[in-house]
Image 1 (cartoon, rainbow, N blue to C red):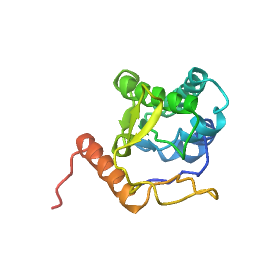
Image 2 (image 1 turned 90 degrees about the horizontal axis):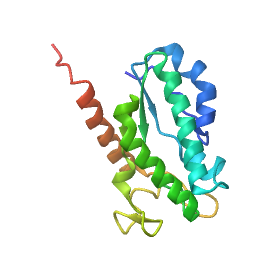
Image 3 (image 1 turned 60 degrees about the vertical axis):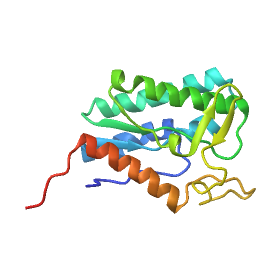
Image 4 (image 1 turned 90 degrees about the vertical axis):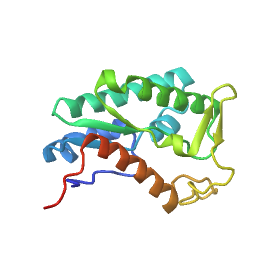
Length: 178
């Protein structure tokens, strides 16, 4: 059951942290699903070096996770893809951030919803994003004025949802109806 849908488009992890006390914690959910971080990586910290961008985004994520965990809420964070064609340093920061999420989830007490793997293979050697499918079946939903694709379409969202459902089923087995 969804207790509160608190997302706000365009927000960074720091923005989410500023709102978590009012928008999430009072509802006392067991899990908080976070599909965010790309605006931190590709907007808020985009002017920094790859290492500094990654570190700042990671620190914002940790602060958000700690705020949730301090209130008995388990963070479930999605990995990140890219919006359009980011600078090489931003791509490197995003790859590092996704790797950090995957490698540290268990030790730091959060769960990873690895939806980036549905659509991209980060080719770390070249610093480029390699689509899993030559077409953009997953990213032709919304576009910026310049045509940059920024959101999944219905089919992409369907596969993201299936991945999340699989994660949730592993966490909370279905209770049969009587």
